[in-house]
Length: 137
Image (cartoon, rainbow, N blue to C red; front, side):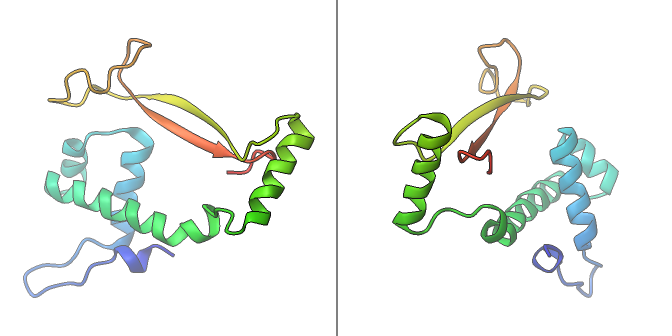
């Protein structure tokens, strides 16, 4: 599904990094938090190339899956149904979503200073999730 959007064309000078390799590099980065420097050695590409691959692949994943997995209500009636569900199931009126976050521990990025240091006294990024009354994203 995503492969066609991340695959690049081979040139006379070199073969392109395949769509499968691009996806593997990105998933490894997202799953492990491994540094781009380390990934660039593992996949034998430059650090800036690895960074571009992660960015392009994440954008392609979002664009391919947003219509299927990240649907937003598109009519006022659908919004009202979500509000009705929250009111009936949880006795919480005028609500159309429940938002929560989780600190995902990371290594301190170089030159980031205190940017990623949180109130819990470790480095993290925040993962947010929004669900409806039935726990659906």
